[in-house]
Image 1 (cartoon, rainbow, N blue to C red):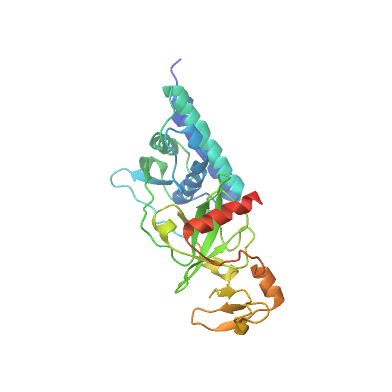
Image 2: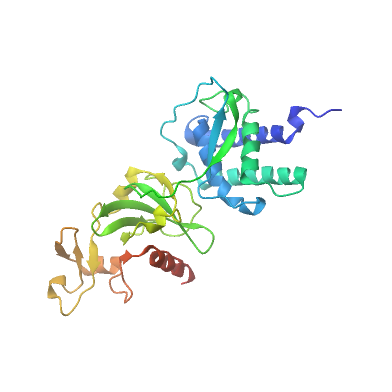
Length: 300
């Protein structure tokens, strides 16, 4: 008996994409927009490198192709940052299953573009109401867009710093001034996916200053933006100075210096929280030294 569409890998992709959409819909307050579903898949794709012939960048950006004359959606504010980690893990598992299906069919690992093509064909097979803002029949496929380098981070951007354990340190850009770019760090390592002011890992209380090279080169990708994250950290981060016998103005526990040069003596509690009693304390880094120091913390 000849195979129907539902028996093909394309049909299986459509079924799995519909299940993923239904699973994330309650947390989004309704079916996802196409852009939101593609965003979830893009974050999930970072975990399927071993299943592909080429290593995905972070994040993967899936871009829809449209039939001529189709009405294209106007993407609004994404709700994806409010999803839990299970949504992105399920998206990664889905893409891994599809990659294995392509490998079984061809006898070799597929490329990321091959996987994107299959997802695009699968999206055309999802039923009505699975995606909130488009008719899947208007899609002709998906492409993978390259993440542009050469972009400086803006206040509110979220950065992913590669960690030695295969995950990422996450950081929010909280200020840009004469000291450099101030990053508010989150404790621990995580998949590279956006966080939000309402859902985020534990905060490291003292921001650090760093140069822009790792962002401009693309080594530290910008994975999201949320202006609300600034409120988790000091809005005008000071540079802290440990106490020194030859600088009595710093006080017995050190001082904080604002960007305009004003010194404020710290309490003992503030100094301990900032780590000023650590002999290796510093707040200003070249990017490679900050990355090394963060990774060293994983070994301690």
